[in-house]
Image 1: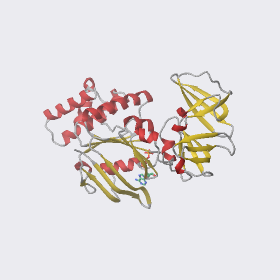
Image 2 (image 1 turned 135 degrees about the vertical axis):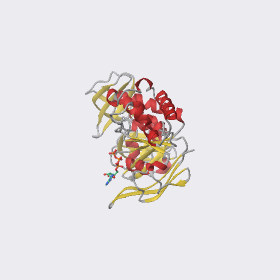
Image 3 (image 1 turned 60 degrees about the horizontal axis):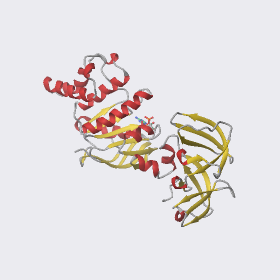
Image 4 (image 1 turned 45 degrees about the vertical axis):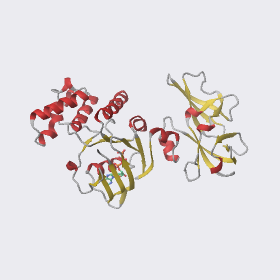
Length: 360
Ligand code: ATP
């Protein structure tokens, strides 16, 4: 068992409050990802859980027991850093077994645990090499191996993949998911990369300026972002966000105008939550837009990105706004062509003037 409970957790550095009161429950064996822009407080929050940073106010409990005053070594956690922090003069075997040796674990048991971790991480053939004889991905696996041998209740990862190239990051994401399944451990993972968050997490915690913006499964955040910040942050390419006015609101839904008297976009089932004349922001994911001869939006294609399986059209709308359209497969549309676009109303999001999503 390993649960984490944060209650009104705060962190101040001098007069600056970096973490502004966070409540969070991490369930046993859950993979929780903290994601947010640079400086939002992700690492600080993780370091407080690890015991590397004092908690200014609030309470942190592991398995229901307060640990605010417990030292990092006694919390039963293991942390994996972005920088790997391997000892250059030691072999992989020595690096992985180091913490156990320091803890006085007998050699035979140490070797057994290192061999088991090496098997899980497919490092068996590298055990006698030194870090400089390994690739970046292999070094990161050794750093993870050092955590595994300690058999921690909770694994903490601080941007562990950010020093790797894109292809290796993709491969390591798959390996981390598998590792989570194999080890059956609670994992807390920090990244600024929302794709990493989406692919790894059972539960994502979106942070901004020291506060939680939303907590939910990847698909909950994708399909039901609570506010404009989450809508813009989760999803790649980003959700298109367009200022609009409610032209009509009734039981059937909302009719929105991007320009007064202009063509309307109908969004079903949000009619009760807004009034005619209200200023809102319309959110349309790129895949919810498509070229259509009778579409209500009109503009010019500025750029076409052909990604093979997908085509992205960058369109300048007549009103001056720009949108991105994502089409499955290849598409014959060319740059500088006029285009009409239709939106899948059921997939649209509407946010009030304060940036909060209108209830569906
Ligand atoms: P990044 O993705 O860039 O690593 P982050 O979300 O992990 O960012 P933190 O490193 O947690 O952000 O920092 C949160 C805020 O706290 C930042 O404004 C940072 O400048 C500030 N901060 C962090 N550590 C300290 C410190 N030791 N002293 C003063 N301010 C700090």
